[in-house]
Length: 264
Image (cartoon, rainbow, N blue to C red):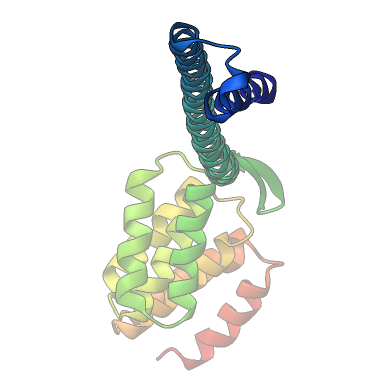
């Protein structure tokens, strides 16, 4: 921009000198002076227009640059928001993974508990081997428990309850390997509650069903004792005679012989 302005100023200076100089410097007439002035104005206008055009171009360029910078800022802001959203999603996914891991662990624990419970139940249902009067049998766990509980109740001295439990056992487990022992212990429970008549019936049923049972001699002695308690001296002496004849080598026979002396 300096070159046009310099040329213009040079022309202006020459023109001024021509106009203000003495008459002998009349290099230009009035018409030429006007033309010079018009030419100068034209050049000044052209320079001003060029300056304005360049200023406008610069303003436009600045505006475009500002718009580009603003768009870039918006893009960066959007990208930052996307990154934050991605971080939040990742955090949620990690939380979901942790929760899923906990859920899986809980399901596995429950499966182990269920499996253990099933094993325990199956074990309770599995037959067990027991030895009864020198012989081995296979019985249900519940059957064994019912018999053991009834005998334990008898030995604890609760005769009424043991009578009920042993009676229920015989009705529930018909044909059980414990049947003979259940009859024998039921007789003892009845004797304990002083129901001598029913005690005699159970002991007699036991001996009739299992005359070779190791406890058969003891059952006959219990029959004699029940008869003695009922003041049936004749019946008691007769039962002891039966005991000594049927099982002469038994301890019950020896005890029965001693018992005869006290029966009057």
